[in-house]
Image 1 (cartoon, rainbow, N blue to C red):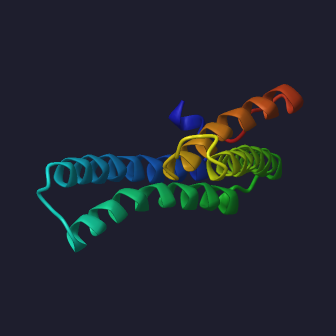
Image 2 (cartoon, rainbow, N blue to C red):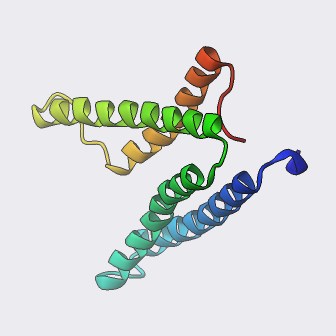
Length: 138
């Protein structure tokens, strides 16, 4: 299967793999060290920020795939996929935000909106597959 992948997809997968490893290392380190009160103050803030940076990097990796993809059809599929994911995540965040603001729903940590966005990529790929016959690059 690897021989069928474009160089753009291989670079994307390498970036995502590195970012996921960093995410897991930083998340578990921050969770353990902060929860067990082994760090506090500025080091705790740095650990928390380090856990979030790989997630931001994943958005960058997807953007780089959009920039580097040379096949216009595949690029269009990826744009549709990201627009659908963005619509789902932003609509969910807005609706939940109003529910929470009026005391009708519990607080949700903001990192969940990124998780919903990544799930929306899957919905976008399904929509692409059902409407255009192809899910997207890869």
